[in-house]
Amino acid sequence: MHSFSACELHRRFVDGEVSARKIAEDFLNRIRQLDPSLGAYLEIFEARVIEQADRLDCKRRGGEPLGLLAGIPIAIKDNINIKGEKTTCASKFLENFIAPFDATVTRRIREEDGIILGKTNLDEFAMGTTCENSAVQITRNPWDSNLVPGGSSGGSAAAVAADMAPIAFGSDTGGSIRLPASFCGISSFKPTYGRISRYGLVAFGSSLDQIGPMAYSCEDLERIMQVVAVPCEKDSTSLSDPAFSPVSFEERYGSGFRVGVPWQFLEGLPNDTRAIFDRALKSLRSIGADIIEVDLSILQYAVSTYYILCTAEASTNLARFDGIRYGVRSDRAETLDEVYDFSREEGFGDEVKRRIMLGTFVLSSGYQDAYYRKAQKVRQLIINRFNDAFLKCDCIAFPTSLSGAFAFGEKKEPLSLYLEDLYTVGANLTGVPVMALPAGFLPDSRPIGFQLFGQQRHDAELLSIGRAFQSVTEYHTQRPKGMNK
Amino acid sequence: MADITEERLLHLAKLCRINCSSKKRAELLRDFQQVVSYIEVLSEVDTDGVEPCNYVVSGCGKTPLREDEGVNTLDRELLLQIAPSSIAGLVRVPTVLTPSKN
Picture 1 (tube, each protein chain N blue to C red):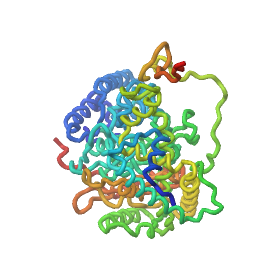
Picture 2 (cartoon, each protein chain N blue to C red):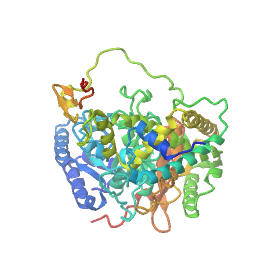
Picture 3 (cartoon, each protein chain N blue to C red):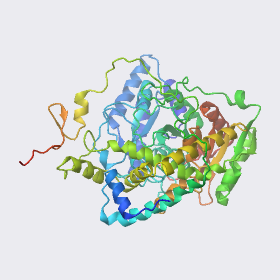
Picture 4 (cartoon, each protein chain N blue to C red):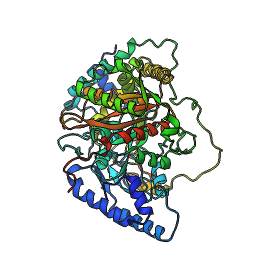
């Protein structure tokens, strides 16, 4: 049962072939069996899951209308609120924080009868590339337990890859959904900025953050997008566009479409990754794509621009963690100043501290124009170049990363980890929708993905291309070995 | 462009209330210098006449406004439950002003 897609589980439940109770127990068993060695989940809501499944079974027996997610188990990254449950952000600072309200995403899942299994691990406050910055635990890559799952949404990626949830939510500020999805061989989608409400997501870089789903197939991503991509009055940056509705690839692109590739920017791509990327382009050609070259050499400045803006926003957003109103207050603190200083010192990990300090630096008097304002201008230039490129094509293809997942502790220097975001941050800086899809395996069997960037607000069109791509490829049907206990 | 010295690092640490323990200071300084020298590459981009980007999705530059109507926000009891310390319906903090010794 656990290897069925979300859509298949829903169909079987609605048709009465299987009970919600059976689905819930099957996934809980799977998690009990595999998660002690993988560490994807920070918390599992066993009692709540069974209770909800029983309620759903009653609902079906009573002939009540069933939601779009009825019978679908879902995992949620632990920086998204579920009322009455902990939201720790994998930080010591929030180890005892009980969310006083539901995120909009959580509310929508409930309204459509989705079953929330538990909360997944992440790099502390979603700051990281490997999930190693979690203050709670290590998450292992289901394809090879010596490898990181990628970050920051590493727990969500590992949960889906190991069939411990057919769908999981992550958040993506600079690639935090797409990188782990690629490292774990699954599909993922970062929608247009504002397409999914950020209400109830713990803020990191507010102008870049976007919640998005992860699953094996684009069909499942489309299903969940219909539920969560809706306008929300509690997030002032939420788009007022009508709810997401899938489009038909045949109708939209049946007569062909254009995919841009920024070849000049991709010059440094290693041969192995390049071969997989080329094969993905070939599959796109087979569904009617015309591949053309686009100039996005401006992206050589993307990582610098991103790290200035995201750290500036993080230093502002994380100022609220002061040990006064919520979170952990240091026991050592005797004066008000000590409450701030000691609580932050004890509560934050090294990477979070580094980013807050860097953000404070780029915003500080005398440096703001040279760094922060400059980065805002370069961001506009990057948006302009993307707009130019989209005049010539429907979507733009990129690799997701230079290579596959790396070993624990392999990359330690912050800068070398920041450079892993080379191909992903462009989508956050420009706000465009982007999906990362499985594209094959490196010679040493590590999975790897590629990305398609779409135009702003063309989320449904982009996912239709993803579905068409997956109708001619089988990478998204592969599962890690040794997981079928 | 910017000279990142230990003194500047300590000043920044004070501004954002991140205690920079002497044990980790050398490592932090090295990482900081490395990252700052990397991001300085932006100075070579010609941005003359470019407006800084304040909102990323085109056609959404304005903050939407709602009617000025009262709504129920979060419950006081619930919020006090998550506060590290509370007293008489308020969040408790250490004494802010101390009485003068005279």
